[in-house]
Amino acid sequence: MLERLILDHLRPLVSSFMDPLQFAYQPSIGVDDAVIYLLHTSLTHLEKAGSTVRIMFFDFSSAFNTIQPRLLGDKLQKFSDDSAAVGLITDGDDTGYRELIQGFVDWSLRNNLQINAGKTKELVVDFRRHALVKKGNSRLFLLRRLRSFGVQGPLLRTFYDSVVGSAIFYGIVCWSSSITDRDRKRMDRLVRRASSVLGCPLDSVEVVGNGRMMAKLSSMLNNTSHPLQDTLTALGSSFSERLLHLAV
Image 1: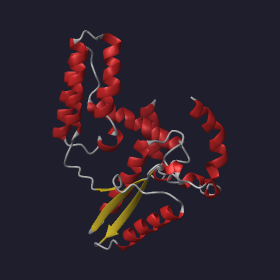
Image 2: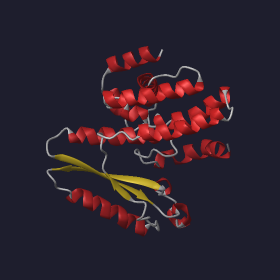
Image 3: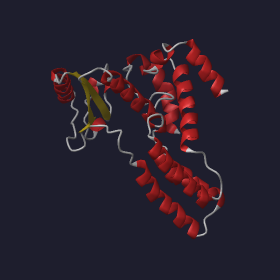
């Protein structure tokens, strides 16, 4: 609560210094938006022949404990605990990407930021594997155990929403449109088993995905500072009209 009160006063003072691609501490913008932006940028590039994408996720050791106060003046919003560098590579030439990474490392050293090499990873996204079913099954076991202890009603549903549902539907706006029919059926079977444990109906993966996607698109269109707002607007007014019609 204190953080929200302070942000209301702090954000207007620093908004003009914020990087347009900063997702942290922005109103109505979060992890989903960062992932959507990365996917959009990556998939748009990968449509070209001979293209690859490499993404380096940096983590800092005690980021805000190593900052020198004298450096904060014009770089306040550049100090963040998590940062990602994206390399859009064509025909195997990753020179620009390597220079970008080296430049980021040099900047970090100059500004007293210590990169945590153990948590800094270069990740490859593989859409052929869907690990959420395994995670959901392990959480569903806990739900069944709670019911066996006599926990029922709203408390059991709260546990489902916060522990099971939050795991299987995490980032659904990013993957629901590209999930295979086989994986969608596996996810729906998991939801039906959870519904049986709770004793009440639950929305399918498709319904949840569509609902959250519409809410996210509406939020992005209404947020002029969102990094993808111009991209969505460029899709045309007909898209916006359909979105508003469905949202109503």
